[in-house]
Image (cartoon, rainbow over all chains, first blue to last red):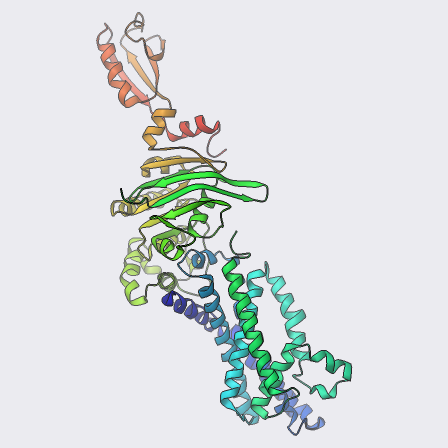
Length: 253
Length: 308
């Protein structure tokens, strides 16, 4: 194991997104603050409580999760695609680093970004709307687990993508719709039965309900199922990302 | 005999219907300054990329210090520093930081890399630019940075893919001198180039490669002796007549007081010609030699110029 190599690449990946924090950290915070302001101060009076909590409280765990998984995904996906397009990848591929080490470093970099973004939105919720966090350790752990899973998925997308257009398509046509349909803004009990059934096939639904449980103690789905779903996604996506990197698909000829 | 620094055996690689390599064999000894000379698309970069792990081969093997570059990649890659032809771009970090990253990938902690990095930045004239981003550097500086990156882990083997492509004459000479210094310090250097002059000036041994095959290998001198033809022109004080019996065995033309010899190796033929002529009545006024170059060798092997 090339530990120094691994650590170097992790530092590079984390340093990369911090160096452009205006693109990578602030936007999620600003959009979350806007959601809180709009929903909290304008719509909340017109919307009744959901499962015993105020509407703004109800949506905040979903916002945390949306920020976490979009940031984790885009960190690895864009960093990998950028390295491919800017001819930087040969520096890594000709170094004494295994595909496993390269993939792991990228995933950790993306997971840190997901964790930083998710945690900042959580803090925003605590500060602005006094969000109660029933299980802080569980919340942070869940954010990290989901970050890891989606960072792995992002790495797979980045390695397979040939252009920014393809990445944007994944983000706009799959990730964002699945996040919105995963119950950020509503409880699925408010949906007709057929739509509820469809939600069960959306993995992000379980992520949102999992974190809602650790923060507010309420959830549409079983917490253990949400947790194991997150673990399963983490294992599947990590293994896929590592095997794909090892295979050299699209990055070696 | 020590292990060869690089051993390439029976290397084949195709991209679909395009046969990039058709059985490349090459041995590069430790401490050698080796040049792969060939036109664009000859297979030079593909060979290097297989050696460094960027390209999978179809058949054949590549070894570095006797160890396989696929199964023992950690060892072999740690021995090689490569300056690729394509310049990489990084938007995020200053160049000094990039060199620390590069050292890190090779398992060298920043503390240990510091003196090497400081020396490289100074030697390559990048000292004042250490806090600049790559996009702020000129083309020549980017090339030098590329070289610094290849040397940051003090590799035994340095591979340079067209290191002087697109840079001005002054910088080219400066880089050549640096490469000579590295070679004198005991490094094995493998250079690909399509500049004949570069191969002739720097390389102790040259492989001429075209269409995925090594056509010929040897010292530039041996190659030109074997395959090239040089001209020796001798001006006499009188018309060149009645010299046939003295100059039998030479290929030459005589025109008034001028003799033009076509020889394989001017270094050995010239004294012979002078000696033969001194046995005659004529006096030599001047001698000019047009020595054969690798360019002639390339021409006679492939039937075309290197940049055609």
